[in-house]
Length: 188
Picture 1: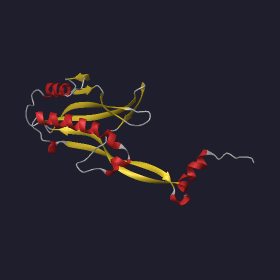
Picture 2: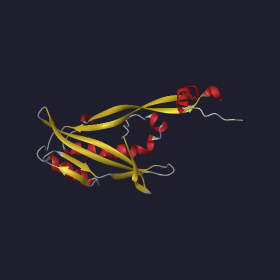
Picture 3: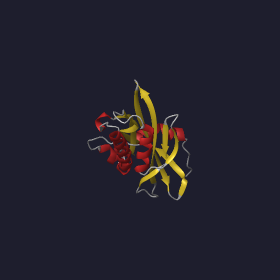
Picture 4: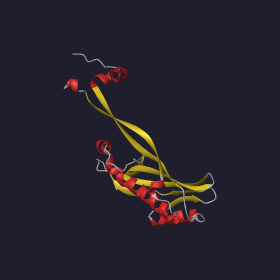
């Protein structure tokens, strides 16, 4: 019997017939903003000192331009085969809005193959709200929750240094959607 090859574009066009997708919505952190209430004279020095005190090494910093970039700090490991190490980096920018100083924290995450450090993927920090997020379990994001908690710990402690309570910290998030493909139930 002779086999015929089916062109790839036909398979892609027919994939909705054979597979159904389920979209799961979630949020990622774009940044967190803190408006200092007190101790505004030495903002740059206090933030740098707090970052070092929390175990972050400084990769790059410029007081005149108003930014600090930490080195990546390992916060966990996935249970996948092969496992990946998870790292968090924080970029801090200093700006002024309506005459008030604003500290902007941007998280950057990286997933690294420990056997080959040059093999890595940049990933987005998942936002975990106050209530339990059912989608985080479906997408196996729960293993990345310690990265979010480490990021919020940094933001919370620096905000407290400047007299700003966490309820005044503004988290900017982005809505995301992950499609989960499963075999179509009609074919079973």
